[in-house]
Amino acid sequence: MVYYQKVARTGWLVLCLVVIILTFTLWMYPTLLDFPLSFGNAAYLLALIILFQFDNVRRGGIYYTFQEGIILFIFLNYGLLPSILLSQIGILIFQFFSHKQEIRLKRFLYLYPINVLFDLFYLACPSLVYLALGGPIGTGFTYSEALVPFSGYLATVLTVSYVQCRFVNRVLFLRYDWTRLVRLQTLVYGISMLSAFLGIWFYDENPLIAASVSTLILFLFKRLLQQRGMTLEAMENAKRFDDAKEHLLISRFEREAIDSLLLDLPHLLDFSEGWISIQQQRKQVIYNIRTKTIIDVLPLFHSLSAEQLQTPIIHGLRFDWGKDIQIALPVDRHSMLAIPSITSEDVDVSIVLFHQVADAYDETNADELARLLRIFCRVLHRSQETYQLYAESRTDALTELANSRAFYEEGAHQFAADHYPLSIILFDIDHFKYVNDTYGHKVGDLVLRELGRRILSLQQKQPAMFAARYGGEEFVLLIHHCPQNQAIDLAEQVRHAVLDRPFVVEGHRLSITISLGVDTVNQPYERSFEESLRQADHALYVGGKHNGRNCTAHYANL
View 1 (cartoon, rainbow, N blue to C red):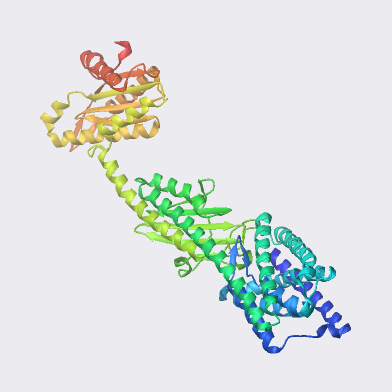
View 2 (cartoon, one colour):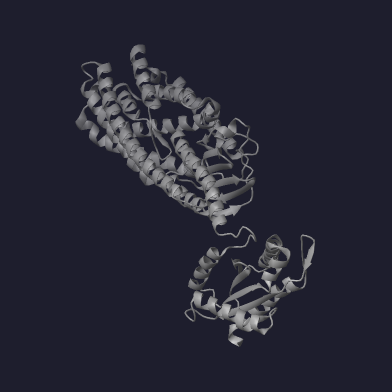
């Protein structure tokens, strides 16, 4: 903000200097003050200028008003001074009344001197070149004599446009595409010159009729361009957002929904930086949308009031930002679109986008993005329920370990992936029927639950381990990147986790032991998952149960 304050002060100083020079020139040459327009005609032409300024076409952050045709008509018929004076009055009115009240004064203080100086150059330089090349004006205007001067006029317009583009890029840090600017400026001035020429055709009939004809031609061309651009842009945006909504709606789980949104957002709206905050169940995660990585908490919305959190925040230029927007960004970031809070059930989503282009976002963008985020919130809430059902279908209710269904899914996945060597440890409780017959099935269930807790404790220390209750008193472990010796050592750890500490349940102190069978597959296609499971089962009964129980046996050592 400090930088743009300096630019604004410099702009006002330069404008004051230009006004002083012009005032001195008019004082030295009072004949320049001759104003050939009557008050009524001047008011009518000024009204046309203001009409075109407020009904503008925005492309790439630049406002095209098509007032150039009216200004050119005034210059060719009445001279340079009336065209400059009426144009400046129009800019003053437009600059002060065209923006929302909360940013109106800021825009005026920062942009008015720059816009005035740009307008002076746009009018004075091409017009002076036209006059220097002998271009006719007023009643002496002829089309044949105006062709060469108009070529110089148009070339000067493009040159001034290029200078303006370089200025806003380097001084105001506004990114404009030079080739796009040239195409649009050529279109605008081509139509403006055509309307001015046709308006002059009717000048002998009545000056106001001539101006009206010129205005009508400009208005039709502008409306055609505006409607075509708006229709194409609206259709493309609607299709992109509809596709993104479909991608979200088919997402089953939280990760799928988040990945889908992060993947689609860069294709929905242009931005230089963007962050999205997702808060659910009191846990907040913030993603950098460009890199799709998690970052630290972004303190952007912390200072906003409750009312501000309920509505989108849209800013078009850097100096529109209020003191509430406290974030370190490069000086060339201007446009901002923030949706501070979209809430559904227990999910809350916030998003903020920044862009180098001025006035890159509008209410339509905010509405479309807000609707997409509402769908995202509902999908996230639904995914929590889906995941809970999915987890319950794969979890053994008694031991809280995975069930046999989940184990078979994991086994198929691990054997298909390149995670070899893979080891399977299958084990069951020795003489578990005796526990049930002596102490009752309730005690037996408590023993199974305690065994599940101990296995879960071991699993937390071994990230490569997948533990499941295989059925009844049988349990199974699947460990990837686990060779034979490591698998035997791990099986012994499990055996001692059961043996070394008695099971205290319902006032009974029970000494429980287990027998274990192990099999290891060292490389792909050596054995299938089912074959390895059968060999672990064979090792359990032949090497474990038949050898006195409370021991570990590996199939390779039988």
